[in-house]
Length: 265
Image (cartoon, helix red, strand yellow):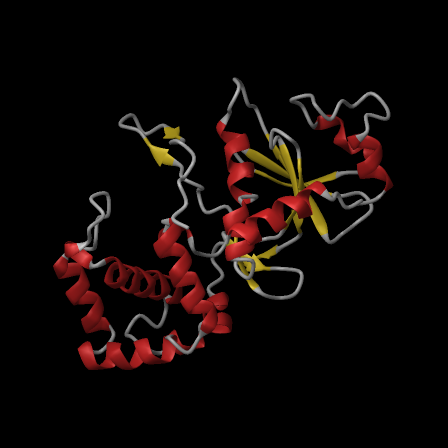
């Protein structure tokens, strides 16, 4: 793992070039300062805003349709949460340990106010088709024929709880599903024997086993794995998008960011 992380840092240090418009902006040619906190002048260099959220905007690069740039928005202070989201997405452990599941990051600002990543085609929020495309073993395995996303989330949560030891987990911060909820989910799957048979089939799906490892080791939010937050990478593989990266809600309902996640590996 140490060698993988060193290779990843070396990769980031050996910058790629993404076209004339990007390079002109990056090197400060013109009136747009790449170190400023505002990115509205990107349009002057041919960038096109194709997405925006509460914390980050997404820009299509002017000369290369295979990449996008994610920029932190409206940040203040020395270590704003928006930059932490970019930093988390570019984390070496995710990029080298789970490359088949996360968009590839190709370049970053030193302070992570922007990152360049591969362009991903996201599934619409109401689109459940990704479950059947990438996890066909689940389709038809329970009574919820009209909600494959919920089926996927519930099943993945059950498998994660089993790996963590359920109520006997040594992790004091881990909160397994309640026994009555667990029992209801097993019943929906047709009982214990049916679940065991499903487990065997799912264990033959390398994408599922890698995803199970990711959500177990890195504690990503399973409820965030749904349309709008999943998509296809440039090579057609299943990838996860913007899974919260540690965002939490305080007692007043305000979104807050804890300390950067201590990755398990």
